[in-house]
Amino acid sequence: MNFTEYSTQNRIGYITLNRPDKRNALNYEFVSELKSTFDLAENDENAKVIVLRAAGKAFCAGADLAYIQQLQSNSYEENLEDSSHLRDLFLKIYKSGKVVIGQIQGHAIAGGAGLAALCDYSITVPEAKFGYTEVRIGFVPALVKVFLLRKIGEAKSKELLLTGKLVSAQHAQELGLINEVVSAHGLSSYVEDFAQELIQNNSAQSMALTKKMIAEVQSLSLEDALQFAAEQNAKARGSSDCQKGIKAFLDKEEIKW
Image (cartoon, rainbow, N blue to C red):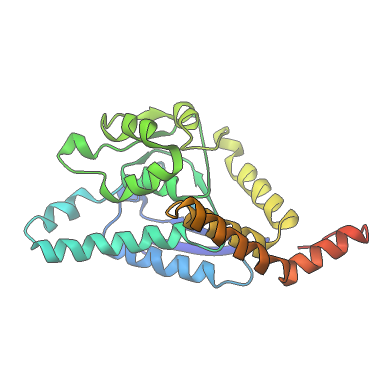
């Protein structure tokens, strides 16, 4: 059985976590396949937006603890290589040029909550629980915290990372980890409708460039960030999508993206 499935429909690339018997827990092979599947979606001209979803009751239980136990006999260098493997997946998702929507139908724990934080938008159901439980088993939320801090800030991140507690979907939304909470029977249609809004109303070039700027300006000084923004502004003015969009607006024509 493949760890992931990929399909496209109506310009949406659907990536499905497909290890339901293990609550979609991540191991080396799963991460490898997920990286390849994101590459496939990134390069798929038929997919303008990516939806990350999962099979089974749980979205993702995080790292496969049986796999982590096996790694405890590894050297530091071997464990660093394995950790870097997961780091590369997280970077690939975060830096994707396409908007990534998380369709979270069940619990997202530890690395699974990390995947939720990596998505540009995360939409879930009232029954789902979220949490970073690493400190409760003597582990650390190392990679996931980098993106969680960017998403919700230090104070809210500490609430999750240092307590290790599970929180409701509603509280996850209040913290900023989740964007919307909708009923389970309406989740798929809500995600599809939201994806179609982005697909039909927004320029792919503009969304990709905006994502790139959001990711990069946070590590720059104020002056460097503004210089970078000015350069991207100038480049955007000459882009084909900008020319198309402004012409259509001035000519009072419908813009078809």
